[in-house]
Length: 95
Image (cartoon, rainbow, N blue to C red; front, side):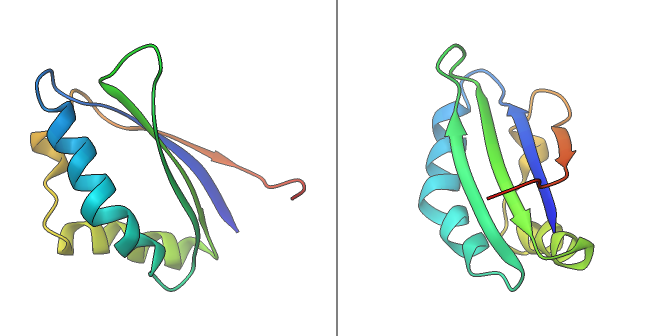
């Protein structure tokens, strides 16, 4: 199991566009991916430009397929991001 959080800071003025795109288009599509077990989209209470995803995939291949799928969905994250995403991977201990 691949478990991670992805923290993204969005360019000022682009946070509404990012939130709507991810909420209305991307999240539902990612949840349909083979090997996806969780894809939760969150927004910081302290900074409206910071978003976090909690993600789980069956294995590394499923995670790599997810990354490719994002590109196929036509989402250009580079145009919206203010810096590189912060990915942190975890070992799942219990459910």
